[in-house]
Image (cartoon, rainbow, N blue to C red; front, side):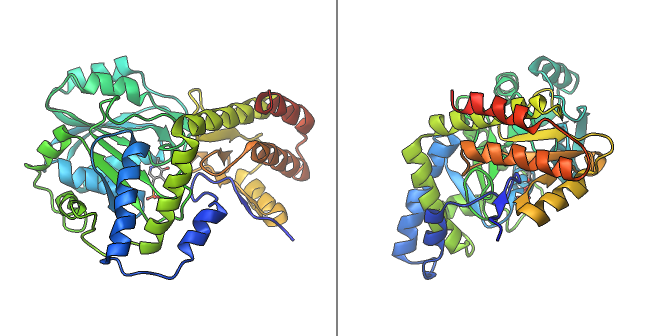
Length: 378
Ligand SMILES: Cc1ncc(COP(=O)(O)O)c(C=O)c1O
């Protein structure tokens, strides 16, 4: 028998209490009973986003909210700057181009970040820009970007809105929408919210809502004005995945009870222990500016990462994420997102170590575990 364990940066493991809530008989979404659950959820989301703005819920994966940010905030031909440090920065570039925007594609070396000063220089060279896009964690490279610093810069320009994809980081690491001057913040259900995939979340500042008034890009399902209008009655414009909302109420209750600060602190501790453990085992890290929501590990040259992941999943029931695109086969990614504890770190490190050994590459597993244990239980 194998216990299946997810160390993928989405979907992530779901606590039993949340699973049980979602197993309850389905209810109709236009009933008082459901709308009172939705009301609680909409209120709770403001805490998760650290905002006074409404947080809208869309029945889609996170990419739906990324597309919504483009089609609602901009008009054909407008210039946007995208900080593109991996697959998900690249996604904003692709969506922007698909809708006819003039995209300044700021390619950042994979595994590296961009300073706020560098961003300011780029804006100064592109003063007609209407939007700046960043990922708080670029999941494909496990890299953290200085969203707080970027917010300070972008907020100096009254005609530019700041859009942040925090799909693999909101609820795992600090992110203060209002304080950090983020105009549009996006996340998804299948990461730190401890839910299955299927819901996307998006919140707009007053500055961003103003910008929606002139947007001429085509939209229907992703027209955020529809979602804002129905939210007045804690309702949704289209049939929302009812069970996910019921589960979300429970996960918000768990997060609120625990507090975001404590959750952020624990993610940081687990991520630090993982990184130090990996280094002590004799392996290398992918990112020079690592996120505390996911860790990227560079594998030895003679090891194929995809084979390692397949081997560990098949033999031990443990799932890691592979490298994407140019990193395919070269790395393994370990998620720290959501419902995890200290012993999960030890499991992840051992699984990678044992898997490598079985594929013929010896690492010092004991040294890695010892180091991680010191950090986790000090
Ligand atoms: C940073 C980031 N952005 C966007 C996405 C895309 O989200 P989805 O697969 O839910 O559409 C992901 C998914 O892993 C992500 O990690």
